Length: 282
Length: 282
Image 1 (cartoon, rainbow over the protein chains, first blue to last red):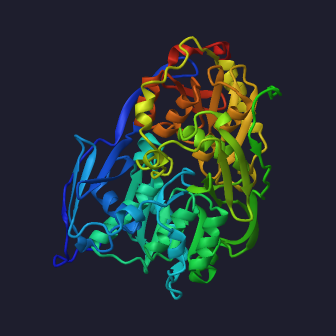
Image 2 (spheres, chains in turn brown, red):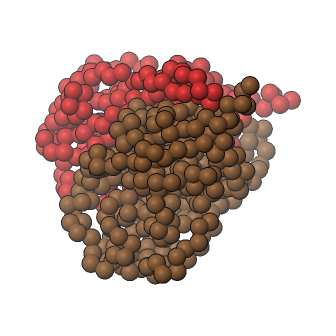
Image 3 (cartoon, rainbow over the protein chains, first blue to last red):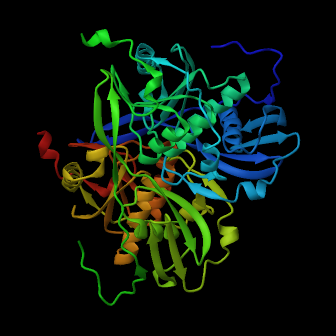
């Protein structure tokens, strides 16, 4: 982990804890009773300056970072300095955000809904696509094939709620040398992305020399969020969709799909990948 | 397929067609160029009586049914008779819905957002959970284990966009005898559920003697949508979450998770399953 600069501004944050799995019993095909763990899923209602904004359904592993990342990726708050405090209280499934000067045009900015693909009906406020054309990712960024393999192996070996309970998505931020910076799981993959955006905000990390990994599909909104975070490399164990592919080409992002073991499919931004593991095949 | 009663009211519907896959090229780990198909993902902006309501990101396979099911599941339109026409025009990625008397309190009813779990940030208008407590599913409904196996096998053998291009979710409606009624895929699983709700509305089918199958996870919103459709059985190849499990118990729905081959985990509403295939294990 990169050490946090002690002189950086930080809002007041709660450190809310919640259990991430829940034990249930089930009957299998032979009528045998078994016990299994399933992931927690809880509502987190976001209040900004005492005004109800939205309710996020979340695993609950990183509620403060999720709240910050949501406000950041929805472009509702521009700078971390605008946020005084983020206080999560699971006893009422709510998070209270206090800002310095409120959210400008909150009515107007939360009016337009784009119901996105992760579940087919996500909600993104404002014209995200308008923003895409203003984003340019570093053309000279490079990623080694051996680093791709290091990232895939790191994820494979990572302790996770998924391994224990399934039914969650994982996202991770890596340095372009393959160092794991953050790993966050959530019942919703977009929550996991937002929580990582929140952590990057808190730690003052830029995306230009980072690699983003997701277990989820590379749909348009995932690619847009990655672009918003300024990250030139987006890796997934899964595949992509036509619009995810189109947006990646538009912003010049390198998409690597179907990353498992030593396999991947480099879809876009191909010039950025350095094939330094070709001897593997000789 | 059950034959449609010719005397039933039907709105005027377009029959919009769009290509469901898109061909792209990729470099694999050995630098070899290959061609693959990825699912389409396109915006469909819903206009109700010329008022913009929402933009759905969809595969585009059943836009009229998706629009109807969305309006139905969001409880924005109560009866099919209230809808005069649904006209999809892919040249402008829009669908124009004409109603008889408009949507009552559309402002108020589309104001409250619950950002749900499918993608972590779905959008459900209104207090869906309030509705849950008013739903009761038929306690005497039964499902044979052999029918569960027939359903799983039917899905396995089904021609699909998934097999061709991956990265889509499939949903299906079956009779309680295991007859496939509808199979719909979408980039978002909640869209696929809504499209099936639209088809049920058009065909005047109730849910009480049906079985719903989804390739996606049994999260709270999926269970709520199943309950709204009055379907007592919800099957998934995947798992469930704590709130999906909780809602299923609350409405008395039978949840079967991890349905693959001859395996399943019967989580809730256990009294409804008839173990008529136990000899398989003897």
